[in-house]
Amino acid sequence: MIPNLAIIEDLKSREIAEIKYVGSKKGPEKKLIEKAGIDFEGITCGKLRRYFSFENFADFFRVPVGIFQAYKILKGYQPVVIFSKGGYVSFPVVVVAWKLKIPVILHESDVVPGLANKLCMKFAKKICISFEETKLYLNKSSLKKTVFTGNPVRKSIFSGNREAGLKFTGLNQHRPVILVMGGSQGADQINKLVRSNLDELLKKFQIVHVVGRGNLDIGIHKTGYKQYEYLDENLKDVYAICDLMISRGGANSLAEMALLKKKAVVIPLSTETSRGDQIENSRVFVRKLGWSMLSGNVSKQDFIDAVFLAFNNPTKITGNEIPNGTDEIVQLILNKGE
Image (cartoon, rainbow, N blue to C red; front, side):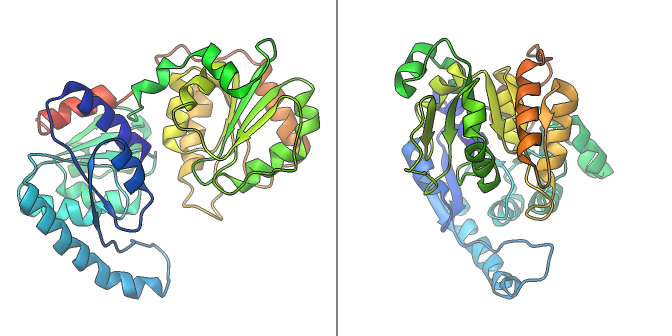
């Protein structure tokens, strides 16, 4: 979702393209897209699962419904190019675009492509990837139309103001700040690790903790600890004051941290709760940038040790290791994949 906003932000700034966003009728993206001033169209989606579930039977019928709805939208709107970010909502749109001979620019954020993108790749004119390592997972026909761009990251996050960030949080300018983020829904494991180690962490650091919707702990009142359900407009200013970040291993979060040249502790989702994409993403960044990474059942001591190790180690980031894919992807969109 956030990489889509990076592309939208760039296209809007050029004032040369009209944009329509097609997403899930039940997805959370509608409010964000409409807030960005973009027309949103919702379609019915059938999730593509690799495992047995009774939902697969219902979703078998949702896919053709989504294809029909996508056909009505694309036939009426008549776009000159489609940008697809993956996910099961993209499949009906990409198939219809291919049928209508509308060029598709597809982007894969993760090291290992997701199932929906794997299915869509055969219909795409160009495949953009965030990791060079992704090429190991592509067949010959996909490789021929693949270009390494990096992940699209919003340029607005680089305009943060340190003074504004300190004013917003009320934190002390003379003490280091840790920013903890677990994604839009929060991360229960990370929230528990931070809260159970607060006293130890606050001896050295101040903490801005983005806990996710509904995850505030109103019983915690400690100097130097600020918690928010989510951050929107203020995020760029909070980025400007933080010295270290603790985050999941989503490709977009990793790319933002790298491009902002932050030290980091990465705690990716385990294979018990995901397909393992965050682990693969994190390994690449940790190897290139010298970040700390924790996985599995993390003990309190392992967590504290990783935080202090990451903070005390000099960063390897020069700014050239991870590209921001926004410009190159937008250019491919404007050129219809040529």
